[in-house]
Amino acid sequence: MTDSLSSSERLAAFRKQLKDQNLDGFIVPRADEHQGEYVPGHADRLAWLTGFTGSAGNAVILQDCAALFVDGRYTLQVRNESDETHYDFPSFTEEPPAKWIAKHITAGAKLGYDPWLHTPHQVTRFKTACAKADAELVACSENPIDAIWSDQPPPPVSPAIPLAAEFTGRTSLEKRSDIGNKLQAENLDAAVLAAPDSISWLLNMRGDDVPYSPLVLCFALVHRDGDVDLFIDQQKITDELAAALDDGIRIRSRNEMADTLDMTGRSEKSVSLDPNGVPAWIQKRLNQAGASVVFADDPCQLPKAIKNDTEMNGIRDAHQRDGAALTQFLAWLAKAAPAGDVTEISAADKLAQYRRANESFRGLSFTTISGSGPNGAIVHYRVTPDSNRTLDQGSLYLVDSGAQYPDGTTDVTRTIAIGKPSNEMRNRFTLVLQGHIALARATFPKGTTGSQLDPLARRALWAAGLDYEHGTGHGVGHYLSVHEGPQRISKAGNTIALQVGMVISNEPGYYKTDEYGIRIENLQAVCAVDTPERGEKELFGFEVLTLAPIDLALIETSILTAEEIEWLNAYHARVKAEIGPLVDDATRAWLETATQPIR
Image 1 (cartoon, rainbow, N blue to C red):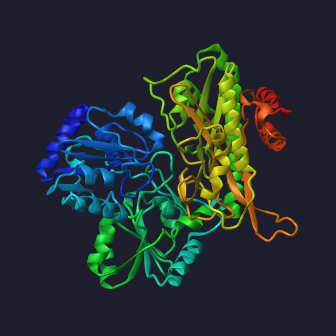
Image 2: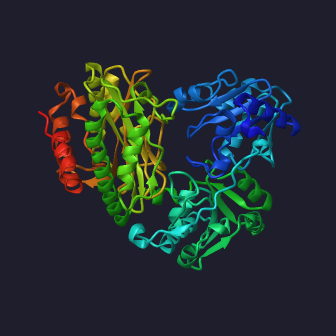
Image 3: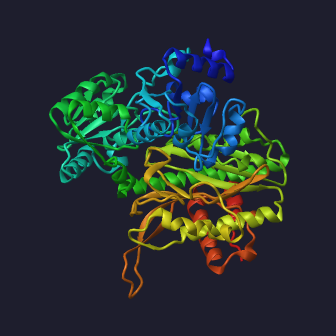
């Protein structure tokens, strides 16, 4: 049975299966057919084959060599989890998969891929790479991993439930009408939706098909009249959801999708799909049936990102409750850590315990990153019994965590000094804090993108010859995915302008390999600010949503400006005022000290 084999034995079994399917290689993505960050167990093929458990990556397996590609968040993790005697780890930026394929595949070779797991744009890149080497890219009807994964879990069938109007602020019919009007304006007949967060948002439903995000795995075809064909395992449809869905939503089985696409094509309809988010299989089916396929962004992503007043009020409430839980944890940690028996696992468990005490808690929004000392330098570190460290005196402890509530999703990082920090730790922390404050205080004209703001968070680090290798900010959903687009703050070019109602993280950091990591993360919402007298531009800024103390012991006040000190003191005053009434007396006393003004 392959489930009991070592990673090298699995790789050997996989290569044998490729030969049986007359293939010389195969592309193994982390993604499932929905291209989401989290995948259900049956779709976690990359982890099963290679051992790599990060949220993004690709492997290319040839008969004589193999490569595993990850981004800057996972450069340390991939080497800890995957066997470097079997896999090369090329730089994703310097030698991405397509470039590696063109260099390593031989003429006449057949490179397989699963058309459900790759998007049209990905397939185009891989076809071009193969053509350069006179090789052939082959779409496979059967995934070779599925053929040898003997104990592969079944697809999830968690119950889908409606999300009440008190949380959504808008009905599904209202949202669908807006999407239909958008399709009409663009002379489109329909749009394919493959992203579960888009469909869950559009239909005001939630589920539990993947870890950490309350999503329902399904596909949809939304029409210009606002009607929707929902392709879903009908075991998921609860009586509650069926009663909430109106007549404009036609529930169909997954098996009916091919016929529906064929019928759409035979009618010669114009159908849009996101070339970076919809399976290539769907594009091919529509094209073969005669549809006019138009590449366009998912029409739900932008309106989903712009929260309405009801959603924003709920998000603020969720952050207050979440801030109270985190503050209780920080107060507990300040008392417990000096005893020397707190570990990364016990700390993460304690934080989850405080969150679970809230009756609105629906689960964590991602695996808590609980990293002490050198483990904190691994950007997306995941503690295991083997890697678990004690929070030692003189170390830094980085905890990045969040939760799901029916009125909001949270994500917050705090870095805590355990005992007395070194001067270098305090200096680096303060540089990161300066970047965090610069972004939080930013005022910018309407039309500004996150990429234009990214340097604000890095300037203090850059001036010291330092930087970090991840983005500065990602969008956050409303009781949906903790990472959502289309907005982001990063070095990479982003053409999406920030708009009022968008929620985005502010999380600069610094990581010293094998020693410690630092990150300070708050969520913030884009808001309108007053234009100064004689100003000519409509201006936006940020409303900070996260409420939890920032460790004063790590701040080197001598390098802060008066404006930075003013911001920090005002933030801490707000934390004390809003969180103080929600916690017990002992925590409140600790909070009084933790938020005292600095000079």
